[in-house]
Amino acid sequence: MKNVILITMLSLVLGACASSDTAQVVDEAPIKYKDLSLKDQRDLVKEYWVVEKRQEPKYPLAAAKKGLSGCVDLIVGINQDGKTSGYKVKNSYPKGVFDNHAAASLKKWKWSATEGNIDRTPVLTSIQLDFMVSGAKNAKEAKSKCGWDYKV
Image 1 (cartoon, rainbow, N blue to C red):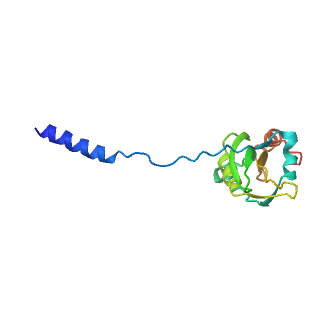
Image 2: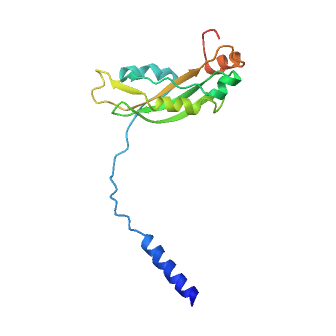
């Protein structure tokens, strides 16, 4: 008898927790981005958007202690409001060391539409953020992997 009462009580509690989803789904059209993410198209983004606010990434303490330099190349979406609308890590060296710090800084970037970008066309672009510490143990390899053309 106690089991029947317990099962009945549990059924009532669980039944009360169930709710019908009355939220209305807004049918938004997907954003159509102009893809400028290829390496030879990076500079074309300047025809559409200019960086208004740039947040430099924080250097990971563990990487600094180990004397590591590197880079993160990200594909970034710039929406019609001039804000970062998403990102994907395209490549990084050393893998995973600087990724989160690079992404966190890019989320804070803001862009202004150029005079020629009257429609505020959303774009995908590629941005590489470099992380350098003097006396890096991996300086030569970082220079090679990150494509740096300056002396390390």
